[in-house]
Image (cartoon, rainbow, N blue to C red; front, side, top):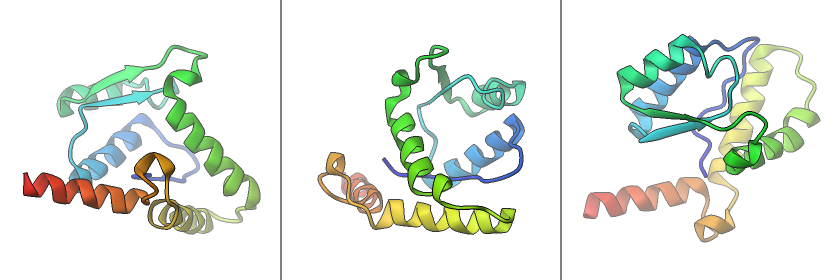
Length: 134
């Protein structure tokens, strides 16, 4: 339930997505799998090569079936309603600053009922401490 990255830009290629995923892996570790829609940046050769090189399984939802990735669709809807639709961005630096602030608030301030009313940051820290103790 944690937002690990928000990357505003004028255009995002598959190679850029791969670089951003590498950065997330450095911070948080390698996932077992990624689930995504069929956007061109996610079906590119760069992503296929990244998935193979990184040994991360990539699963595409069926076209036209966003309910197969319901958590992400809910998250994107919240981001759109609370931030994107409410802000008139005048520059890319402003968009980066606004999205960074929204991400911090989402991760550090808002409790999630699915996480026992902890924030995503608190929940992730509990898991990290439990793994260290095991």
